[in-house]
Figure 1: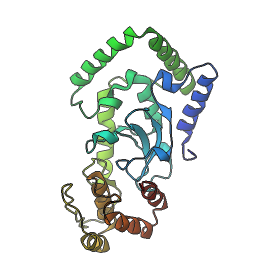
Figure 2: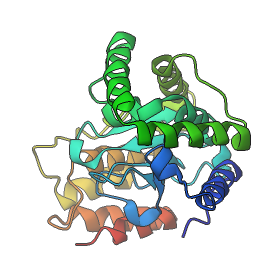
Figure 3: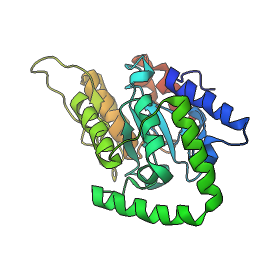
Figure 4: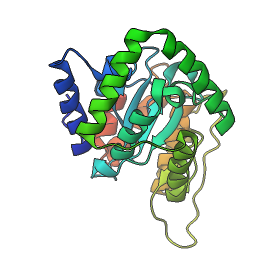
Length: 272
């Protein structure tokens, strides 16, 4: 079920259906297919709604809702998740779905999508693109399908070519940083508003040390909302919220008390 898709992504899905009638698909032409919340992994932030995946290593993209604060998902950041590369598993790719479509149209072979954890400069990105282009040229059948899909995509979606993918993604991340009132270890942070002079305590999450129930409950009982959410993000990112520890029950209880039904459902779905 993907009833949450905003208009831009609904149109992209309709476009994929249109391609299907011609024996093509976004999967064949770009390398991504549609998925839903069931794609979520332990590394997928609880407030990210997966909508496409790469069909390999659990790699997927989703919409960041900021714990339900973003009600118009046309304005939601698009986050890429690489579960097998934890903890360096998250990357903001675009500021919203429309820009994400521009990204898909522009980043042939999804170089940034698959390699973001290794790319540290424009030069490095371009070098990887050149290597990918060599492989692309050696596969005439794939090249033909991709060119056809991208041409039709531009016509159907009205997308535009991005000049520099590296700068495009950097710009999206900078836009996110401007929203953050409390940073988190996954770089996504907590967005929102705080009172002038309000103190935001930070729980010192250590990925090599379990968090005791009493300690977690004590922090959550007195911390402001932003600090609570940052604690939850950091604990998840550190891999400390799973079925092997009572902390999961503490986090579930806190999310329920805050009224975050979608995030509660996500966390419960990760039972194994």
